[in-house]
Image 1 (tube, each protein chain N blue to C red):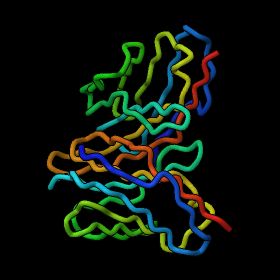
Image 2 (image 1 turned 135 degrees about the vertical axis):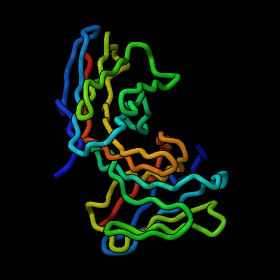
Image 3 (image 1 turned 90 degrees about the horizontal axis):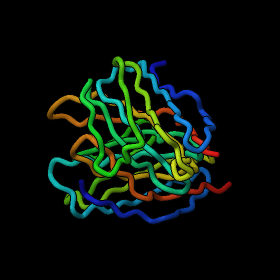
Image 4 (image 1 turned 90 degrees about the vertical axis):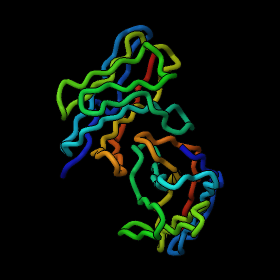
Amino acid sequence: DAMVIQNPRYQVTQFGKPVTLSCSQTLNHNVMYWYQQKSSQAPKLLFHYYDKDFNNEADTPDNFQSRRPNTSFCFLDIRSPGLGDAAMYLCATSRFRAGDTDTQYFGPGTRLTVL
Amino acid sequence: DAKTTQPPSMDCAEGRAANLPCNHSTISGNEYVYWYRQIHSQGPQYIIHGLKNNETNEMASLIITEDRKSSTLILPHATLRDTAVYYCIVRGAQKLVFGQGTRLTINP
């Protein structure tokens, strides 16, 4: 089945130690998104890629970076994780066509713990 | 994107229809109403979306008022597995802006 895959499902890192989360998709969608969801809060968009074009949200900290080496894969890099970055990180994809609406499909998420 | 208002929580008996309301009085003509749900510790799951007309799929029905200022998501025969947070989102541009949603609890 076509899907959005996130690895690992659970990630533990140390304060200040860089960490990379990965997302892959078999849907051949042109847009990939990263959301952060802290405990008891709603998901919040960090950034997205429309094909190779990177679109950062204005309030996303510089500590968060992303890479999209090809259509299928997208990575979230946290350069120096702080305790406040502990959260569920959600990847989503969509097929966007100008003039039409697009539906985002989410992966299962990666729960990040910062010690 | 327009703001939505949902009740923070609702209860429904198993086997009954669950009707989840959403107010979006500032919706503009080209904005869609989307519904997602999130079961505990999982990623959000797409349910349904609509622009003007009522919509139905295998999961739910979406009823949008004629003035488009409110909508109702209907789960026709709720099961325990439908317990989740349900998000109503109005969107025009690409991004989804999640509100706090409605925590729906299905009781045996």
